[in-house]
Image 1: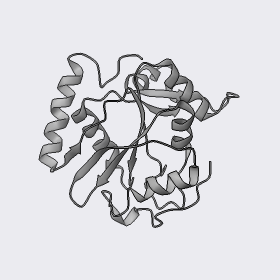
Image 2: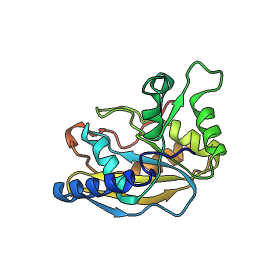
Image 3: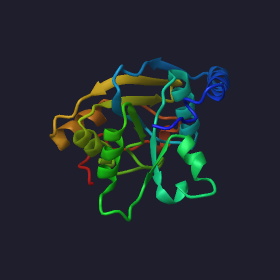
Image 4: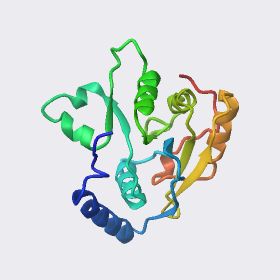
Length: 201
């Protein structure tokens, strides 16, 4: 995989220092660490605020992780496509015959190390359903799912719990969502109301 904002010499350490300083001043801390596994899906929830992205950057820099995220293929065109790639983006071309899941599985298979970050709710507003794309990617790539819980009440991101899919979508999704029970995001008013629902593709 190409060098990213999280692994560029000189620049990354500087950004990490700035990020850690901001996190400390804001009162946020990271509880736990990423597992020593070369490939996995990292899901973060609840997603309730635009500040979640800033927090995400802080957590990733703090953990010294080199992660990837999915983005529309159009974002990666010139003249600024290089920037989104440098930030860890992987273009998803919805016009291809292969779907999003297949494209991510292919990217995973081509890499020696692969950490894909996904917000399963897909939006910071109330949602009736969690998107299950992350689950299908994990199953088809044969990799585990790692949970990152945004605890806005205590300004703590709990990270490191590993979930290994069994192939039973409904049972597994129930277990994953229940693992986030009682966790409030940065803006708890926008937290998903249902603890578990049947998910659509």
